[in-house]
Image (cartoon, rainbow, N blue to C red; front, side):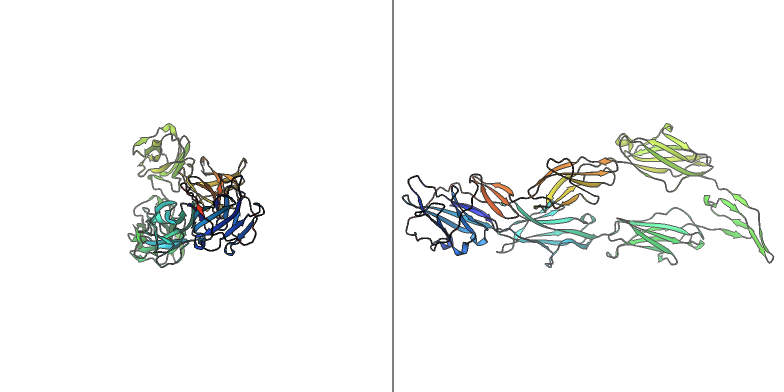
Length: 615
């Protein structure tokens, strides 16, 4: 008995040795199927007083348009196209000769039914697809993948294309298979993660997939009033900024004064990808001095959890007693020209002007650039500017690297311009990166808090890696890669498509969000070369070159002990080669087969090398 396996919807060719010696000839060939072994044959070829080309072919009504017996090959082949699920069973080929004994060949055909669809559902059997959720942080979700097939396919779960679960099970005596995965304690690491369920049949190298992307409600991770440590002036319009990171969706930012919502204020809220900012605009009064200002951040979808940042306000205001103006707690902002005005029924009188100058040690000037991205060997000019009175200052530069060592830089490396100093700096090794500080001193003393600048290593990004190809078809394909190190800068991903032996790219893609591309409108049965790389402001990575062939009518190659099979996963076809020469179409004629059941049938025992047809 020979064993063959075919895919439902594909085609299969079952051999029957009808070779004959020179002194003999074939008179009749009959094909029987197991459930109809005692009835009429499903296919007969009458060669009595005929040649192969004029033989009469008779096909059972049930198999018409699906069966064809091709005698132009050695051995001859019974082709079934397309294969139905009910075609499973034993097939007997009986060959009668004019002189020799009758021969018989038995072949068992197994039919594989691959799932047409794969489903992802929740515990309520609700179908899930695309972006699902949002689910609350720290909650758990259940995903159930289902598919049907014969034999039951394997079901595996992947998290961002990494295998995480392969514990599928068959549901009772059915053809249905399911794999239940539970994702517990969702965190921000689960945001936008793609869970893909794939069903595959190892015998035919066929795969079908379905995926979902997780959306998660996230709590804020911090909140900060960024305007701290500065005193306010009574009667002057003031803006105070609070920002919060990490909440999804954006949090509600609330301002409180002594734990009560503030009134008579204006609030402006802005958002970027991960940060929400609130600008509080109000006019403080002397009564706000030493009051507690609070910025509260909370996600309305996650009640019961809030973060707060507090600031005890210091408000400066003017005290007037009689003929004297008392300026308390002198600050540099009090510098300026002062005069007083006296009023009676005759009019107003204005005094002479007095210039009040407040001297102070140097302080950092606001709104300076504090982050510098520098490649190894690249020279950068770092500007440090201070405010001071007296304005004659001397500068000192120091560096604190990642090894937590502090080093004073040579004065030859920087140039002073009145209240500004410019450092010429070239990092050459890892120890040169870290925090560079600039400090000034005047006649009143040294700067209390230096100006700090962060030097970050930057360069071209690393090459992309772990590229996977999915959703492959005749004219489309999806390519997804894992980004390498971005060089310390935002990077852009690029894909260039080349035809074989063509030096110029026929298609170019660029995008910033992810290293994933979908190519469509490709030519079937065509070989391309894909160049994938990334770039940033410092340059580009080496290109990863991938050969790509779109599907054709000649698909995957699988070989068992004797026979190679070529399978097209789109058309579900099976072709035997190379031991069997290319097939030729034979003529199909209607007719009646004679009843030759009385003749002896000898089954071939030469079955030690059973062959299986696989895809």
